[in-house]
Image (cartoon, rainbow, N blue to C red):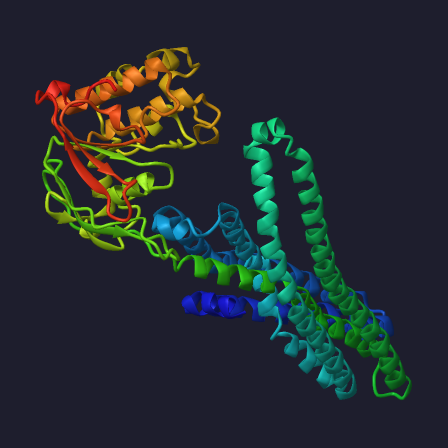
Length: 561
């Protein structure tokens, strides 16, 4: 409820309009019971048709006006949540795409999906209908006041049932809170199984993992279904009790009203009118009580989304160099993964002049890909500095810096958009002729020409449906179209056939001739021939640096290995 009040108070003028509309809706709702009372007491007693016509005309006007006010209130209530819902969705997706990768990696992908699914939970909870239901609650007192004028005894009886419904709703909400949180946690585990079954179909079948996954799914589904049944049973009990209280109140009100009528303290019209008024007084309370579970889920979803939003964000702003030449320096750099007591590496000191070639080598797990991520600014060193032409990367604007790097990751993934947009994503203003030149350079021309929509073909499943060789060629073209002065290739020949390896070496040779600074990360030290520097991460904790002599000519700096 705090969230709802915050949304209302954020726009006081709109809240005032909503309250005013609700007031008139409540006033106009009195027309129906008053109509019944007047028909029974005046028309039935006197039989004057003009009286009936007048009463009917009046109540029809009131019903029409009530409808108009309700529609107006719905539109106003929609505006209450439009901006907050948009902000929550935008902020959450922004965190997903802008948070520091090292922090985001600690949140499993399945949990991220569960967290972001909370956006729709919040939107549903604070919908226009639910806001209207909450606004109706205080105006139940208006019907109680009219009821009190007719009969203080009946007003007291109805007040008792209203308090009872409130108590039922509060107990139901308290019971649902813990169950909803547990259900959210278990749903994340189910999402992990589902993701495996969807994305890794080949692995599941080839290694006969289906039986294991089915058993795990059955067990997990049983837990989920049991928890959902408990939660649904709890909410169903609240609903049943509320409906039962409504029925009991109607009976009790009729009994008391009948007794009072027999004693002459009420007439027949007032007897029927009090029954209608009592129902209208309890109706918003009953509806509010049944919304308890909805608001519990929304509150929990908001809490998780706000916690997610606390992840550290990459810098939107920072320093930039007008003409980056490609220089890169590592000064006493050290890195520890959080929670690890041993550094992955520490204290390498290395300065690369523009046009230099560096080979970073090491066995699996020695930190080669982490080293690439440090260069890209995805991770920050635990200590020391990485300087680009003298600029500390910690102070550099992240977007600017990544436009300076031609990057080929070890396991490239693509975006679910067109091939053209994938290629130019980091340099959308690139000339189309340059795009075609790069397509030819990386050996994609045949693939593009044979695709039904050519360069406008749609990439699906982040490119994982494509052959690995084609996906890596697309990623290579994407990196080249960034056109930066620093080149970082992580295991560039991995999974390539002989033709693909030749393409990579041809690209590296061209980049070397252009005077780019090249960093090749590979377990194979022989990937580069010619003069270069080798950073060996197998040496722990301080990597060794070796200068390998070779042919000085730029054309031969990067050769076939």
